Length: 482
Image 1 (cartoon, rainbow, N blue to C red):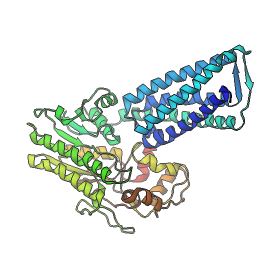
Image 2: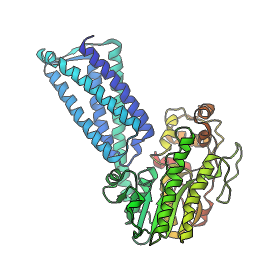
Image 3: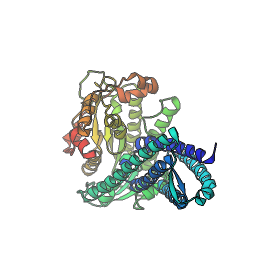
């Protein structure tokens, strides 16, 4: 086999790896097009993708000779510089999951091998008369051309997403700020680098407050918020003399993922109950107690409702003896411990939070592909809330000093089938392709209840306290986000 054919095969492998990285990491697990901090990364991705598109299509059926070969080498040099720049930007703005780091390493090794083979052929290519010579490579050439089209579409998608993020940032900057208090206050926030935490911290900064972030990645958090927040890696870094007016606890490992084995249940408990216990211990020892603690929980507290049960659940309803409910009960109990120190505690039971990150992009993927329809029958209830209303409700509790349990859900609850029907209408896609639930039940076990069962939950206490939702209906919420 000659080195040129081997180089093209390596480039084909590069296309496959790149497609996996883009679809699995950038679109699904990391949801980069919805990240406010990903604008620069997406811009680099767009430029690299368009360069790769030209290279894939060019190398699929043409031989580069003379000065064209030198131009090819120059383009690859530019691509290397963009890749290194991308590595730096990624490291500064987000914590890459292990699978993405491995994929990037393999991509770099494969790309390096391709460029090395290209360099070996370069003297012979330069010695030929300058020309682009038609040289098809059969099925391999067709595959490379298809890769070129695909990566080109991906580049345009990333460019559009970067533009949209810029426009959203301008819109957010122009919006009336959410008021957390009439005067400057000091906030301690956990879980600040997550989907909700990022929006919260930026809202607090826009409202003129001082923010301290507790995070395992203080350097990344400092970059994420442009150095405008203080970042600490552990409660031990905060002396008992430190004063905070409000503590907002959002920390917790993502609950939807691997099966709930004993080890994973322990990890979920530690990330929620363990950290909340550390906060409570620090507050107990603090010389200046915060006025209130807002602590995250979830409507999983209520367990699941039987199919066909349309009963509306309120804050007065009790829990169930299943893992997701017990996890929320223990989480709230750890937070309520600081009431003994005279601190008001509000437990925020989140429904499905809709935003450009979080679960929504993955939920909408089948709808965007025209495959949206009822999941597992579609009769399970979905209680949701727009992320802007969620932040607004936090601010409302900070202003009013509310305590106790609050359901953070929109007034409108829908079944899963109704949810997908509205989403399909907003996205102008067909509706009706049903998806059976048994594969999820088989793969996820009890965790499948998060998708196949539901709760019809109403925000009774928020409404009674005077909070007004900006997005009380799903169509409004999705139209704003999409």
